Image (cartoon, rainbow over all chains, first blue to last red; front, side, top):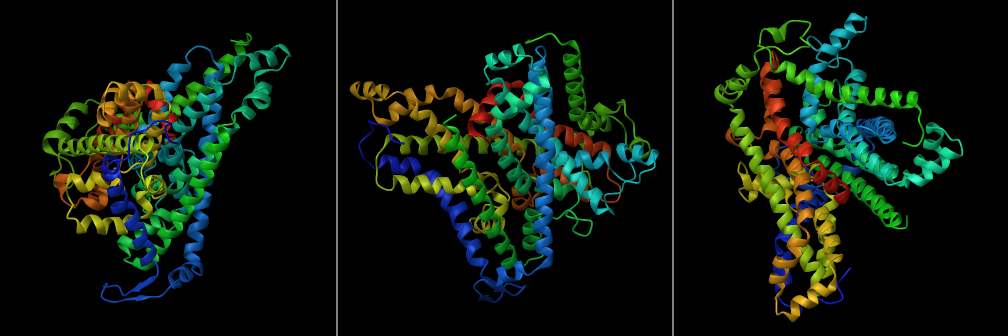
Length: 293
Length: 282
């Protein structure tokens, strides 16, 4: 934590941390406490009067069926994104680790979607699946399947899952590949001499050994699907049709900035903060544990 | 190669090539879309091969402008994105280096309080505190300028932790030697700590540049003045402005231009990128 030898106490360290602390207080801690305070206020839509109502906003939220279904939808959405992107990335990383030639080339060709902004990814996929013009929807039409994510809620959900997954594969792939390449080759060779084929070696040696990476990635993917996919939803579906793709982050934004339900939106923010805190704690406990490996 | 199984190797290559193709398909479509004219982009089926309008569209995006009234120059939006990405990356690195230095090399009251205050920022993504943060920025008069775009995003727990980790691996003997030679804290920071963390700074820069360039929700709230639009949010404005008949050839050109800089950074500085990603675990 601290160096054995260090500099004498002086005003200097305070000056050094000042910028970071100032920004943290002004733009993180103060707004967060405001959100907590606001979540206990009931304001009229013009912002003229407000009344302190303790937990009434939360009670309203928890008895609100729309909020409950948004919650459920977010969980379905993030599980789908996490499961699909982890599975595809694991398959690609295992094969890239298996082939001896070209691992680096494949890596270069697979990692760059990480650099594409979520809203950009959303725009491209929306273009590909555009109901009247899109190339894939045209092909689907050719085989007799009608695609219109502007009317069909399940198709809209499928589209944002696809865009979010596409973007996340590269991140997962990199971590999986790094984990696999850190496994000592002698372990794999010993198993090969004992007659285990590539598939058997994967399930009995490689997969158990990279399980810490898998767990870490699961947490990171859920965080990604919960918060970083706002741009995708906002560009592709705006939560529609009929709220079929409205996830929690989008609802906070929509209720607060568009619907001007300040208390309700703040209460939702606080719930989201609790979710992030839980995920961060899980992630940190895992990092502490991983030191032993 | 552990054993010679040509079939398994061929199978692996086939899966990888399929994976690369699926990953690259959207970008190919974007490129094709950016290389046709407006009329071709309204005829079903859309082309799968590039046309000859690429440079005409490129010129249209930069010179004539895009958007509903053709008032939005892609050049200005890219410039804004570049400034935003640079300010966020450089700002985060500087304040994190300084606070990590203070926390590791000084013993002072409130040290742990500050440490936990920085830690808390890890738990508060922009998305969960948008309304109150927006109010703070509006009260400070930072709407529609570069400060408002970047300063609220500059505090960084991950970068501070990473530099703390790096500084902890610097041998104590270096500090003792520096003190014997009469170097003060800032001299030690500048002449020893900065050079030893050079590659970490570079790796972090790559990650933070991409993070800054791809910011979306924050610029969307902070900027209402068209001259401050960044390219990533500009695309969304184009889609919105042309809800009825989007000009896909220009939208795809803008999309392509929006992703080229960060993609080039990732591919060109792949080693640093991977180092940065796995060290900050961001």
